[in-house]
Length: 157
Image 1 (cartoon, one colour):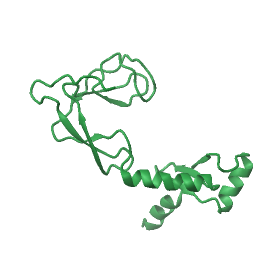
Image 2 (spheres, one colour):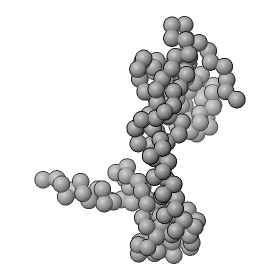
Image 3 (spheres, rainbow, N blue to C red):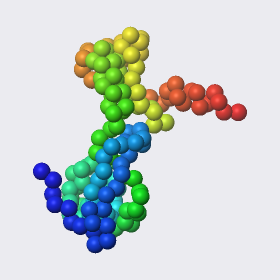
Image 4 (spheres, helix red, strand yellow):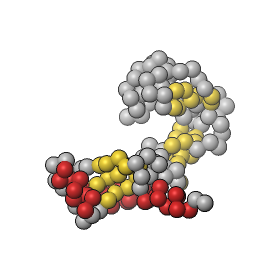
């Protein structure tokens, strides 16, 4: 059950459009923030909190604060991160899950790229064997360099 919306004195329910928190693309959600339009940093993990009061629990780290002072208020027309991925990202994540359950690996690179490595690859087979993690168990690796990094380096002069 949602909490009642405290109306903004000028903008009422104060609606804001959202974007996909994963790809930053379009999102169908509309957030009704009312007068809870302030942004502050969590006292525990420094993530930005929208509409939080100093003693509210951070959804990222669980800290009850004290959270930082109000840094600013939302601007009309600003887009906010949605609560879930867009349909395209959901489909991609579902496809990735199938690959992982088939023996593949999740990967995340220092450059920020993330994806999956198919189960048929020697890298996936060796990684699962070394860590005694058979499919369909989830497994992931952190990489220092990925194909995306290599493409960036090759394109440099």
